[in-house]
Length: 103
Image 1 (cartoon, rainbow, N blue to C red):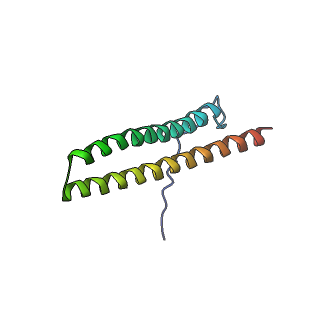
Image 2: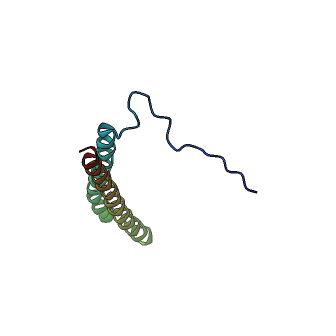
Image 3: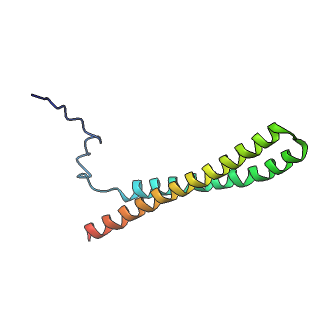
């Protein structure tokens, strides 16, 4: 016989909120994902000029490795920013569904 231990994933709800969906928290989470995506895009864009100027003074094998690493970092930042925006979109869908359920 297998025994299971039930572990709650969320803390017990406060008696005053009745376990209701928190629009403020959800909107804050969505905004956090959007903000993180924007910051990644900003940093990725600013690094492009650094890579270009480094290529002027940096020659040989290591300059090629540097350029390849910079391209990988740029692609990864774009993919991560897109994933963060996707999650923000899902949170937005949950907010919309919560409004429908409340109505």
